[in-house]
Picture 1 (tube, rainbow, N blue to C red):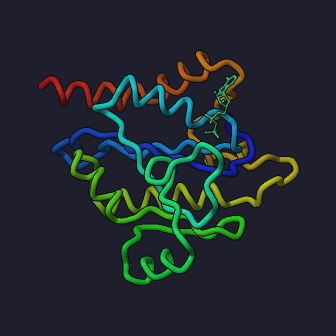
Picture 2 (picture 1 turned 90 degrees about the vertical axis):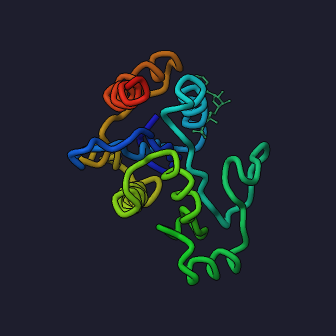
Picture 3 (picture 1 turned 120 degrees about the horizontal axis):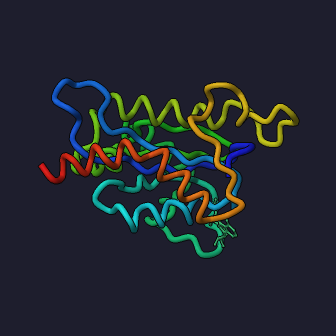
Length: 186
Ligand code: ADP
């Protein structure tokens, strides 16, 4: 599903950070062209592991596409409102992409924190870094595709079979899932 990153979706892994303060739960960012299957895979993951993953709904100034719901897929806002709220410090990260603003509001980050995600600072940093990664190459860059840059993505999944792609996604997240399940059962 990841080749030329054009769009991203984030789901934050939940669960308490270990007491040693080291590698706690972390945001998971799915990035790939529109229609690659990100929402489908994420929906399945959230259905199966509702207590482990939550969805961070981004804000955007772009127009909703058919079927997209305000507050579910994105918060669709005007540029005026978003710029005002960014200036007021209501966003933990934001970026302009293809002529539209995108960002993660503080309230989304607080909502996920209440579900025991990691610290505010590290979550903000990770989200900003993920967005920077997604935008590190302009869309439709000819070879080499940005997804093949070393270190840009933890995993590249080709979604030619939904079951296989979902299995690969779950496999990649298995440590996070096990950690969160262990905490949940302790
Ligand atoms: P994205 O969130 O990346 O824009 P979607 O998850 O909305 O993409 O998927 C776009 C469409 O493709 C949906 O109709 C979905 O059911 C379908 N789809 C997703 N994965 C597959 C797949 N492996 N094979 C065929 N169709 C798929």
